[in-house]
Length: 102
Image (cartoon, rainbow, N blue to C red):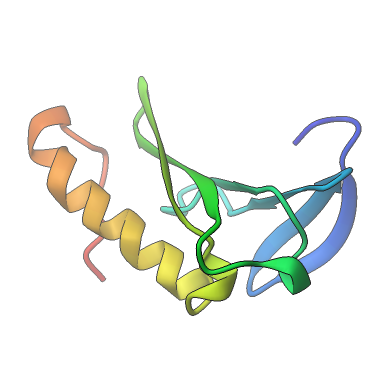
């Protein structure tokens, strides 16, 4: 998290922060969702807008992907499922610490 971020509380189990019009959501260590960055507040979420999602594959590799705003498509579980799909796809090639297939 950045020093200029303002804490807004929890959002479906993730810590929510803001800096201006950008929203940040942080998962716990070991979570398949490490960080999400969206360009507006949840009440302004648009189904065609994209957010940036971060996950740790191993101790030397971080993946960043963009896909539609999770807040307009089923919430955090929607985002987690996309990250599990990403990890199942790339981990055979990059030796991930853990493949999330729950």
